[in-house]
Image (cartoon, rainbow, N blue to C red; front, side, top):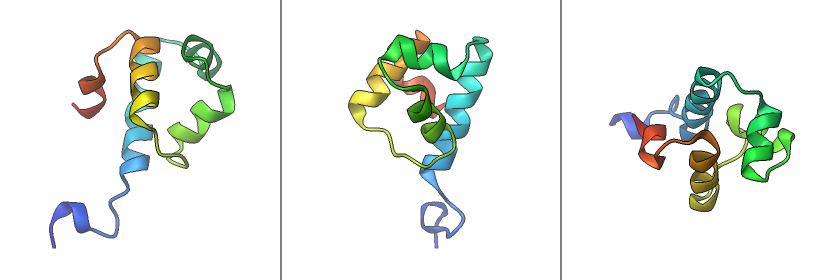
Length: 75
């Protein structure tokens, strides 16, 4: 089976790791990012741990909060 069918593949965890990377690169806290996006801090934590799956609207808000392009999450 291909990479995307692997039992070890978890898109939410991969996204969460990327979100942490992008947030820390800007040296901002979960709370600051949450404030910028209009989210609660615990939601940012859930995204970063891969417990939640972001919607397209969430991706847009996160990209604006981080001042990046949406595609930067997938590089």
